[in-house]
Image (tube, rainbow, N blue to C red; front, top):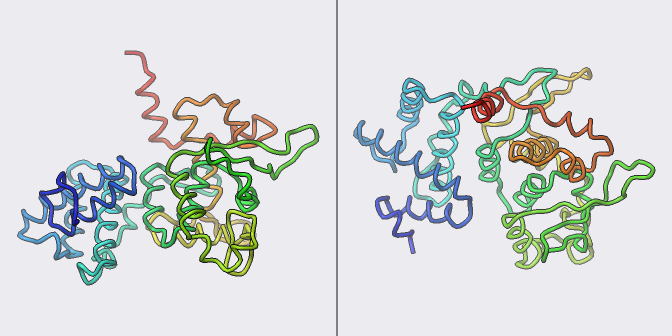
Length: 320
């Protein structure tokens, strides 16, 4: 089977890619991927080029055209990510020799949002999160990203999750809260959706976790080849490694010790968890409990929004 009938207008190799996206990614990703491909195909046809004979210079011309037509830098960059994911998949399957994006510079599009030394506005939008998922090379890395995105847990809390802490019937996890204060709960419950449930099934039931030597002796969800419990430092390294394979990662400032501080870290996912739930209407008192904060003022510090989100909210809530 090369693809779905709904993709019959595409070359079989593209059909197969879109069918896989439909099966494994969100409807949002599929819609964006196919829209981008249609726009790119039209541009290729206008310039007498074949979509399976990609040319880096033609891609640059297309990106210029999008900007001149009024697309924002962010929208253009997201389309570049979508097209890059297609060519990366085709190259991995040997349909093309290599992805043309190796020769495409996207740094001129990656200035939004601006982040300075004092900014805490480091959350990911949904398209950026999905680009990070595309960059995962194994199930464990994808599991880590989905776990951080779906639950908003701290790094140390993620590493401390035991298999017995996961209630798969009710899609919830009992978390040993890492920052304790006298009189406060020592545990809290977080919840997750189908995408993470699917990863738990692959990881725990279908053999992915058993590929690690310490799996048989470990009670923990996350582990390494050397340790039955993943150290927090290693989890941070994995997030950085995945981010470095995208065009999303950047140094946002240098701290007082001269160390570069990056935009995408495990804590970025915690901020993203808070921001997106607030944008969807969750009361902050519920968010405080889910994040495990003893003081609601700490929760408020997570809710610093990008200018484009604030602008969109003003349009939504303005009187008609």
